[in-house]
Image (cartoon, rainbow, N blue to C red; front, side, top):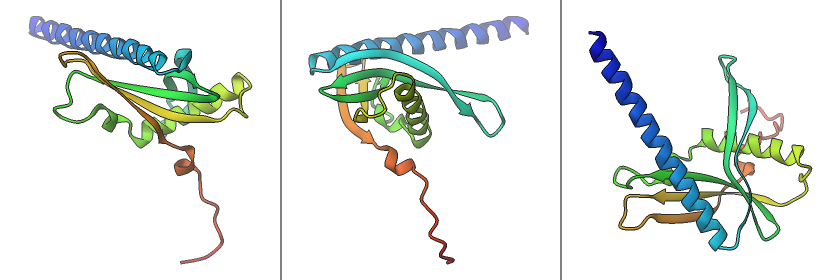
Length: 157
């Protein structure tokens, strides 16, 4: 029985390793693509604690690439997949991920004193299993406005 469990554990480790290699390759391709399109890379893999979840566990936010497009600071999420057969990579940038990136971006801007610099949130989707990798940039994929709390007007419905 222990042999079966060790084989299952090894298989899981191999998949995790392969997934991280694909992600790292995608981030390298995305960085190269951004530089080719005039972005100036500032930082990659910025990680910072952003708070606690409902269970009290510390949550870390990560921004894959931070770059300048002209005078605009861009917080770029990179999503890499081996194919788009199941879904487009960009479909995995859900509201939860967007909220984490917004929180990390606020901390970044505060720490580095760039709170008055215009910014936006971009997504680069990478599909690596094409004849040649397919890299696509979506500028201004979301904004902070959709996450702001609305002021209560006092009206009762």
